Image (tube, rainbow, N blue to C red; front, side, top):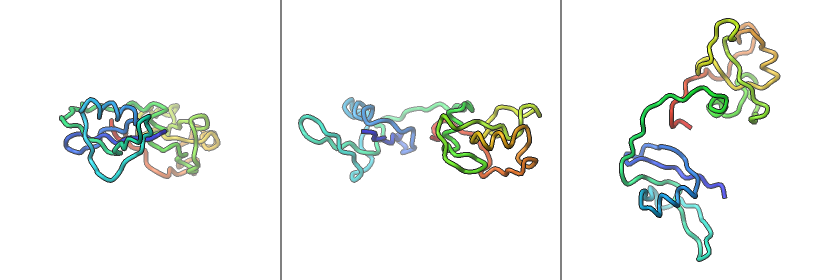
Length: 150
């Protein structure tokens, strides 16, 4: 079973998605309650079927400190939904590469506004050029990713 459960703060601000096992533990410990009455996932147990809500809310406020997320390969791929930002083909972790919009050899830095997910073919074609010089426009402008945006 691969059910993901949405977890909300008391203010109904979405915090994160968790797996169903973690959600069951939170419910048993009495830390969360159901947000909705009509969206459930059925979990088969030895004594029957347990209906686990797809949306849970904490009973007490949970303080989430603000922090920036680093532009790691994994986070860049998640932000760009594993899609090449030049030719828009779907990729996986093995075929995806990270491209610097302004190449590092020209002073480009490894930061959110300068890195995108790219397929190997487009990365080789672009080389050490800018997207304009390579005649390869970006499909989406890269933006910073903040904690909790996944």
